[in-house]
Length: 469
Ligand SMILES: *[C@@H]1O[C@H](CO)[C@@H](O)[C@H](O)[C@H]1NC(C)=O
Ligand SMILES: *[C@@H]1O[C@H](CO)[C@@H](O)[C@H](O)[C@H]1NC(C)=O
Ligand SMILES: *[C@@H]1O[C@H](CO)[C@@H](O)[C@H](O)[C@H]1NC(C)=O
Ligand SMILES: *[C@@H]1O[C@H](CO)[C@@H](O)[C@H](O)[C@H]1NC(C)=O
View 1 (tube, rainbow, N blue to C red):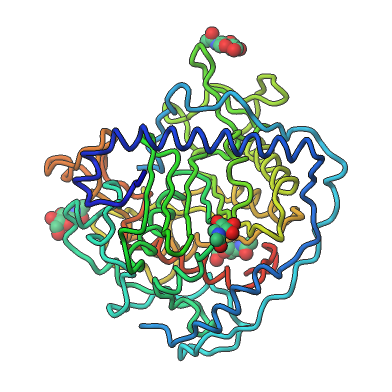
View 2 (cartoon, protein in one colour):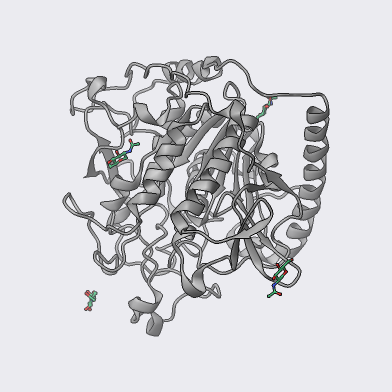
């Protein structure tokens, strides 16, 4: 049965039948994956293998072969997940485990720069792709047209929602001293995705990034009838597939990375040492991109949990300590479950919001430098960076916080939808304090650059976070 991509209108007309199909297909797939992993466990499979970058050499070769000159609200309105959203199973990673305490393995040296010169100096030793500047580049940007991407969600389809300016679509990130490394066309992105499974896991901002990549790829596919998109009603799982390239890009919604469980009496427990069972479904992916952050900072009515749990018992602690325990559980799961010779692991840094001090409303130009939105607690960023450094799996840190901070112009602002999914009325658009979304990002737009940096990084050997920046 085909879930072919159709124009948006047709998409919704046939949606319920498709959801039913998607759900049953998905259930079958889950059962299969579950039994497969049980078999592996039963067979004593321990996926620790010598670190190898061989699989990734292919990317570099490919890059050389294809080196034709490159052409020019708060995240997820923090509503509680529907009861039943959390699966009964869970992966327990709470036990302290001596075996895990080893020092981080040395990471391979960074690859030599091989891109074309950008006129910005090509000495790669100076290159940090996350430092640089935004340059206006109306030719070549955006990487796709919003109208070309039928599954672009209403939340971030700013033009469709009436945003009058389009300059925010036409900026290219130019890293300092990195040659032409951020020039990438859709066709190259597709080649990089060939025979690959890329998986995003995290909150609505990783969904924003997933949507961006799906649009970049979709716009580049020569025969668009040979693509599929499956999207569940709750937006908790999505997959885009380009069949002729055997390329798939998935999104799993998991805003805390650890398990949020809704009990029978509707009490919501955030289990700091358990990972959601669905994470097992990500195993075997070629690329995994994680994020978490904003949901930990929500307070009051927006907070998604009623209490915290550890070792099956209710605990009370500061948010920072809880965050650290959760990240340790996640790190341990990655170190035990991911085979780094098969899977490249990324962690995307915090996506900044432009509220209070530097408000996104009415902004049409990036900020060039200087102090930007303080927003997210520095302590949580430190916890993320420290945990990643101590992992044995090489994790590439997509440190997009700073370059995104400059893009005050790139949020949907009032060109978005309400929590009920309706476009803002003119009346609502006049009340930006209540309705503007200064957390997510318009598409096409900033997340396209996050993906360009992700794909660029796939062409290089993995490195641990401490080698960056
Ligand atoms: C298709 O891609 C998957 C990874 O998603 C890979 O395991 C498989 O070998 C590929 N199939 C072919 C025929 O190359
Ligand atoms: C809900 O159930 C949990 C155990 O499943 C219990 O610990 C908690 O106190 C209950 N909450 C309320 C409000 O009844
Ligand atoms: C935003 O821009 C509109 C149109 O230019 C203007 O009428 C309005 O006063 C501006 N609002 C703020 C808060 O700057
Ligand atoms: C990430 O980027 C920020 C700002 O550019 C920098 O201060 C920080 O050290 C970087 N983090 C890492 C781990 O490289």
